[in-house]
Amino acid sequence: MESALQLHSYAVDLSCSRCGEKYEINSPHNYAACCEKPLVVNYSMNNGFDKKMLIGREQSMWRYTEMLPLMDEKNKVSLGEGMTPILPVNSYSQKFGFDQLFVKDEGLNPTGSFKSRGMSMAISKAKEYGVTECVVPTAGNAGGAMSAYCAAAGMKSTVIMPRHTPKPFQDECRLFGSELLLVDGLIDKCGELAVSIQKETGAFNMSTLKEPYRLEGKKTMGYEIAEQMNWGLPDVIVYPTGGGTGLIGIWKAFQEMIALGWIDGSHLPRMVVVQSLNCSPMVHYVNGNEAHESYGESKANGLAVPKAFGKDLIKQVVQESNGSAIAVSEENLLKTAQELSRAEGISFSPEGGATMAGLLELTALGVISKKEKILLINTGNASKYMDHFL
Ligand SMILES: Cc1ncc(COP(=O)(O)O)c(C=O)c1O
Ligand SMILES: [Zn+2]
Image 1 (cartoon, rainbow, N blue to C red):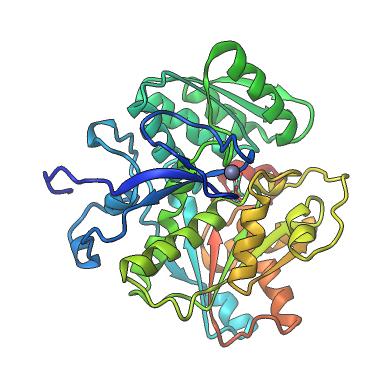
Image 2 (image 1 turned 180 degrees about the horizontal axis):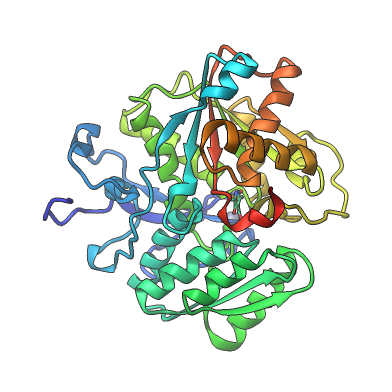
């Protein structure tokens, strides 16, 4: 249980991720109006927050509360998200000869994916600002997560999802009492409708990186990776990328922990973006190839993001970390998710399967060595995708 102590956030303000212009933190913002780019939260770093202070704290992402932007704990909306396990990938390591292969199993979060982290933080912050109604465009999992956290916060919620999204994703939103709107097209089309609803009703728009706090929730994956690996980071992190919030968040956490003196900045992980060949704009962008406009659906629906608002931040993370970006086929990512689940007893979503499929391709290319310490992020479990398996 958490101590009764009222903990204090060291968040000070927000800034534009392109030009650095400052924005105050005491009222709700979407993105940076100056450059139409994502806003990021800044913290005062000489704050005396020592990693030893984590001992005995609650087993959720809120153990890093000083480095989260919530000012008053009474606004916290938590369903027990975070502190998901890092597990060895045993059978596949033997089969393919990996020395140190691990997976962070984000499928064990309250709504079955890492989206719970972002929404716990963003809905808590919305509550702090007095927001009573939220709207979100989603590829699936973020909608379910927002629905759950809005239910917990007593807020009205509207979720906009591509019509082809498997039924369990839709049912989850209805279960938690959201209004669900289905749109022909991908998440970018859903985003257009979200903007009109925001204008018409005044609902707060929770669109990926068009508000600054989901990123702060997702960055806790980075803090946990460091803490759970005893402050010795992996050599490589493989991340299934859609809008890129998790990837950007993990990297932000590493920068913050360097500033806090918690980790050694001289050996940070190489960050690897994996997408589906059906929708791989970030792989094209990062690798400096011309992106085309014909991006389609993916059975790994979280990866079907044709236009990532945070694309420059994604590219920056891959470049700064000396990482890479690769696209895998639909058939490969689905087959790998299924085979991995069977081999390991861990429920892998198609997005999680994509990380292993991408890793195998990158080891074949010699970009990653099988001797390295490698961490896959299984961003969700398989339960909502069962129609694609068996
Ligand atoms: C299971 C899963 N994996 C990965 C992603 C992509 O996440 P991000 O926006 O952090 O790139 C999503 C987003 O919908 C998802 O649901
Ligand atoms: Zn700017």
